[in-house]
Amino acid sequence: MIGRLNHIAIAVPDLAAASAKYRDLLGAHVGQPQPLPEHGVTVVFIDTGNTKVELLEPLGENSPIAAFLAKNPAGGMHHICFEVPDLASAAATLTAGGARILGDGTPRTGAHGLPVLFLHPKDFDGTLIELEQS
Ligand code: CO
Image 1: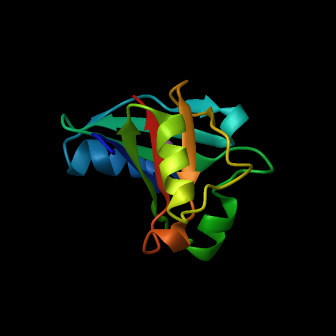
Image 2: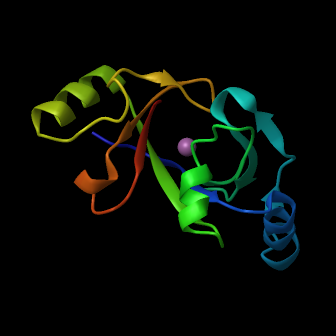
């Protein structure tokens, strides 16, 4: 079902500092910060060739990563995102198999403008998994 690893998202307390480390110490191609107020984050995309790293910093009052950073003040891996060719079919298969989809179970528009779903981390070994329509 799942295809390419689209991105690995890392929540960071200081986006400028994290971006500088990836650029200056790791020699990565680091993009410009993009505020996504509708998602409650500012994101920096890092293209690593075979996938992307997304550095996420909270934006606004109700950021979905605020609680994560409160528990992990130094930052940490927040989720991984796989591409799937048919999100509705994937959701049906997962739900039938007992996996829980976060929220009301219907896709919403993700940070790349494509439909996404998130799977409950307790059903996947403590990892929050995002599925994005490819
Ligand atoms: Co993501």
